[in-house]
Image 1 (cartoon, each protein chain N blue to C red):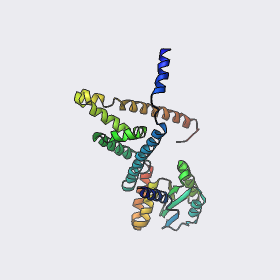
Image 2: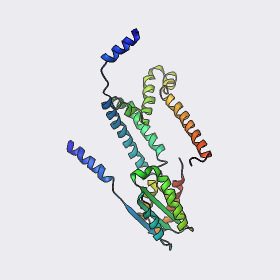
Image 3: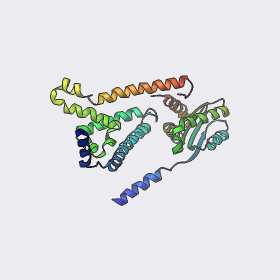
Image 4: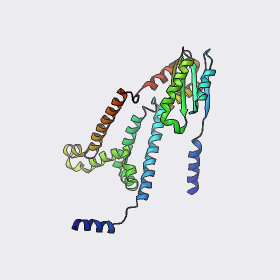
Length: 130
Length: 151
């Protein structure tokens, strides 16, 4: 019984620190270096998945555990910086894990012609308030 | 004087409640309920079109539904006996309060018994919940108007 308890504790502790880094998918002619720079510079971000497609730049971020209380502020700061760097694109930055999840799913599984439809959907559910 | 004496005597004679033990139990049970809630929220986020912000509504509904079922089967009573405040404070305690008073007064008929007594305890939760939400919203509106915080 004690061993099983220990195993579960270890599993829970170990799954806490899984993914890290920055992942960018670019189907446009825009340069993604600036995007990577902005995301890497921010010390609060531990995982970021970004997608550039036609006129959209969609970014899902996951912040460090103790920065979670300010995650909205962090997201809006990144959004401001990205809007400056890419004035022609519609920028969406969200710290909501749904955006991260859907963007990841989109990059991994969908074909490129499906992108636009899915991006519009992510943007619309991100805006919902209640 | 007599009353004071009695209070003193009663304090001396009655066994001390194991506060630390109760607190730990409440912490564990309350935490476990919240963990289940977190998993349900994650389920709604992963398989339906809910974001972290919007998933709270179906999660609350599911948790209340589950606690109502458990109350009906007589299982929530056992959890509450063990966990104390840990089982009463989360939203599941609200579902328990509604259903248990509905079951208790069933013998008095559906309208005056169940209907009249269902919100006996939960009614005050709803009333003060709505009222405190109103007050908090009022304070926030004023703060936003004066530019102290933003929405």
